[in-house]
Length: 99
Image (cartoon, rainbow, N blue to C red):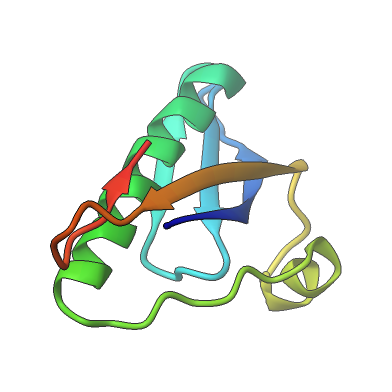
C-alpha cells in the first residue's frame, strides 16, 4: 500500500543570502540551503528521515495542514510556502520505504 502526503514548507530568506525552511506540522524539522532548490532538496530528505523515524517508533504521523492553517501556525510571515510531496510505501516491515 502506498500513501502520498504533502507537507507545506515555509521558506524564509536569511541574512547570508540563503534560505531557511520549517515544516509547521513538525516544529523540530528545520533546514537551510544556499539556494531555494537546495533548501527544498535538503528539506525533503530531512522530512523523509523524520517520517521514517516516527513510523519506526510507532509515533502517529501528523495530518498535513493546508496552507491557510500553516500561516496561522507560524510566528512570522514566510517569503514563500512550498508544498513538498512524499510517498510512503509499506515494505512488509514496520518501517516504510520513503522516496
